[in-house]
Image (cartoon, rainbow over all chains, first blue to last red; front, side):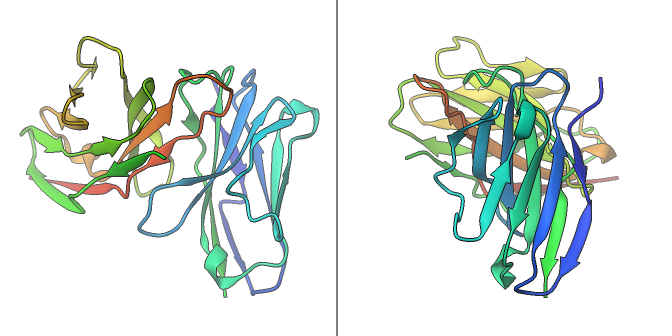
Length: 115
Length: 117
């Protein structure tokens, strides 16, 4: 079974530019998560989708971050405009039903560097 | 609000020895889950083991076991017979398992484990 796929793996941009990350969850997984992991910290949830609806986006900086999950499968996370403090690894995860007892499986992440 | 504390920024262990990684947590939720994930240098978070707050027995998965002490609010990971491939960052995480659909994981700051010959 294929795992969670993410692209690109690495991205370097200058501040005030825009960037987009893509995630394809494990086949059949209804729930998709985006986490931000700043160097030296544990991941922090940005947004949770259940199929194509948003369940939790309370920690998403909505003035610059946006995410969508059209058709309830793959998802895109966008940052516009980027700031220096957005430098981090962006991890996508998925779980089967999104029940609170379902295990979350993570992708390899996208490492963003903002100069 | 949930909080995870990992007080060991780094640990060393010799190959074939056992090692314990500490994790304490704080929550007001009566029903919760505790997790350990491994993050190698490649960046992917690999699920290792899960313990539910109402589980009577400590969880085990191969060489991994979770020492769950509910009264102390601790969920330490024990790795037996360490291997060189165990060298990585290890994160403790928790999740509310009550009502509702939001199921975010709250992570600690991690412990870097280095296995030596």
